[in-house]
Image (cartoon, rainbow, N blue to C red; front, side, top):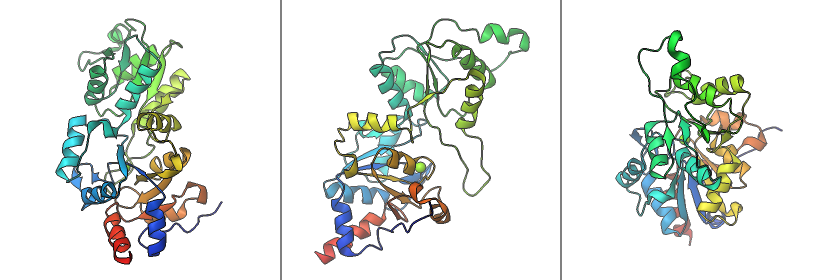
Length: 308
Ligand SMILES: [Mg+2]
């Protein structure tokens, strides 16, 4: 199917803008590329979230980035001026893994190759997290002994971890030989680049190695998996998906996630997607709306109040 004309929220008529903001009660918002660019701020994004909150919208944040502590998230939101941010209003893969482990009553220890921050979330949630941190002295002669499954694991947890190494991949492969051992994967983002540089390896590339070697498909608990949508609907009591707006900067994970879950979708161009890619996408993969930035809501609300 060919692309269609996606409306920019500031190009809608005042009447349409009013209908648009009246069409949702909940805003689910990605973080990197929407609220900030990793460590750089984006202008007026906190103010825009406050404008949505002042209009009575419930706002939650849904990131695929578990390499940041919950307190760090809250501090970042506070620094950019977002009011009333609670840690419970932020969801990311380590937290959805915790939800899954509790829901499925996995009592055994789990083997994790996730980041230290991700493991910390799980441990604080009561999960017995085992890791393998051998940095030196590994030879082919002792690899078998070092990576030997020490006991039965309830799950192998796999997510973004810039320190992941061959030994951990080998141990994960061996634990996954047990078909009773669950396999959870956090952020399956297929592409990653720094600014306009070349595409870089993602943790998804490493996942494909495990999948090829073990023949196992992981249960994905991050965007764009519908399972995450089910978790959000349960945790945040989202009764009517059509009245939720998902705001994201990625055509790879955010927009398909929103569409898969039956949410309305808004692509912002402040992050990783150039506008040409949105126009090149087929109609079924395009968002319902787009904006230069979530900060466009400030002008949108100003337009509406002027015309009121
Ligand atoms: Mg993003």
